[in-house]
Length: 265
Image: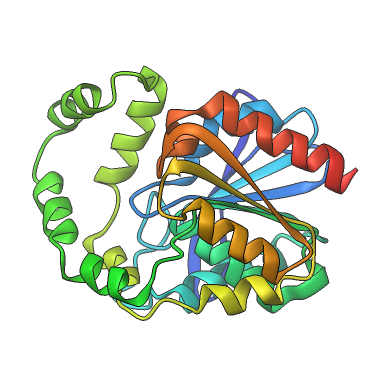
């Protein structure tokens, strides 16, 4: 991260903080999931920075970005990304998103058409309506509220117990991001989510859906979505769940690099 920049830009009425690997290379915007931050993409950015200018923004209510009192639905997050693209003067960037960031990337791509170069969706929040309601009614926001009352050492110790296979660096980044996530960010869980089938059908550029064999998006759903859009293909990373960029970082980076090399070169 020695030569990376850490900056803030004004976009869509808020300040968006981002990390950027830089240099005159194709721009790739990496969008994190709920309770994450741009810094959580550090391992992937290291794997891609030789060929891409990786831009890692923190969503509103996350990291060092603004935390307005409202406006945390997917339409707001997508407008922030479109504003960031405009503010940074990016031409045909690649979009990559995980979880909440994946849904956001799909929405941005559906709106921007061929102004986007390609899209990579890592187990996005493509949930059935009933599952959306279950998540919204669950205690995930309350769990986060309780976490915010704990100190970092305690939270980090718990994270190490739950995810002993994740690197110490990544766990530190994830815990730091969680402790800097405002409770208002959980407004994004308010149903209904955008219609993901409609979004996928509207994407007009080469697209990759990366899933685990035990994540949010099933293999059956991935096959269905691939049938809806000739621009989309999917890859399955074995023995991975929803946290596949964290749990299988090397495998995930390899899949992303392969797609970019074959579809974007």
